[in-house]
Image (tube, rainbow, N blue to C red):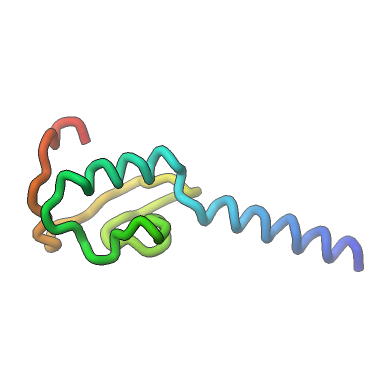
Length: 82
């Protein structure tokens, strides 16, 4: 029984750490969003980008892709640095 509980706690810990977006990735997305005039509605500071932001794809808590073709985002500057 103790082994089963230990396994559960281990798996829960792995799931929790992998479900949170890397803090540097979050900061970069928030900085980018500040330059937009009409950011996507799902992009809020109170939600995790990897779990609920439209157009964001992640792997192991790291942002790996942004796809915003039909979101009509305006105000992007310095796109060569993205």
